[in-house]
Length: 281
Image 1: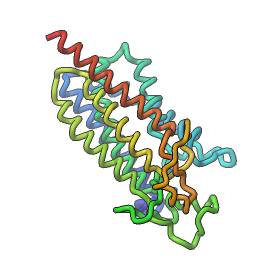
Image 2: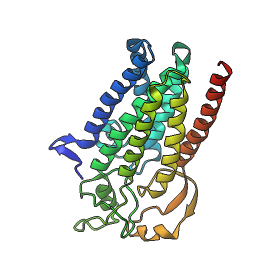
Image 3: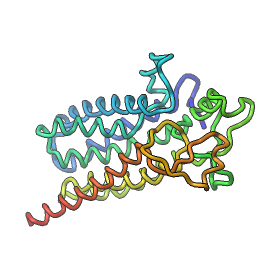
């Protein structure tokens, strides 16, 4: 993988920036399709994005594998990785709720959901290039990847003395690529829903349920430590991942709890808003 696109230009930060720009374009496109005030609502989404960025960083600091007490200035170095999607989503949801009376809420949520999927897709490509949010090490896993010594995974395992510095890391499950593929599928299906003027809010509900389901399952394959677990269930299949002292936990992490809540909320909102639409026909 390539933690730097060129010398001095971090791949992760570049992909985050690209995702933000493309996500904003998608957001504005959906607003135009719905005949809404694009410029006014763009101002609101920028404030929500800043809240999400702060929440994503805070969540990573609280639950991530890296400590910042010895180097507190690194808290601001988001371009090198260290953003939690769950923290960003929760902070963005709180900011949206605070602004709800100023927004055409369900149409705004639809546009924001599709833009978020696009931005998140590029963010996961950035994770793959930087070698963060890595998967477990399972021998003979089809399509496994080997991350470079200067990737986030390489720096973590060598810095913790868990892997010799002269030896290449073993192959890891490319869970970042799996999640990017899932997000791309959600975007394609969501774009079809976005074209329909009826039933505003159902695109957002679809996104909640779809991403919640995918992330809940993909979390099982994650090998990076420090995401926080509510309780642990282990699988013998992943026991060999202990060659990297990777976590063999299958259930139940903090991100899985958030993902499960997203799934349930998405199903309930889809059902509620669909019934409301039928009642007005």
